[in-house]
Image (cartoon, rainbow, N blue to C red; front, top):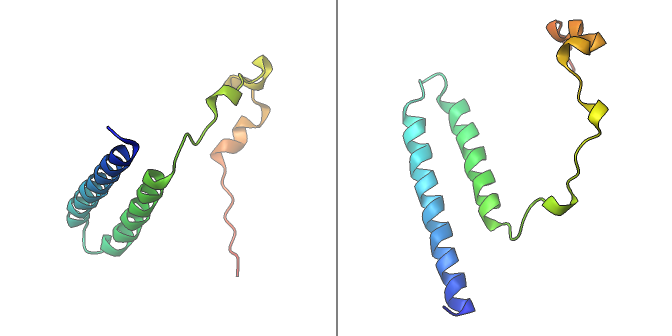
Length: 96
């Protein structure tokens, strides 16, 4: 297959994927209750746009060769974390 043929094939596959995802998201939207509809529609539209962007990107998004293991002491068991008691507290703040 020529380079041009491969590019055309990839474009057709990309378009089919986008159409398939769009149809599935529309099915999901039909399951939303009337009071959740607008919020769900906005979320699903955001996902569709993100998926479109993902399909447009060329090459790896992460250079896995540059990934290194974290230092051994960087991961601590939850029981050893001094501030773990704060996890149950929340802070609510209103910004005007």
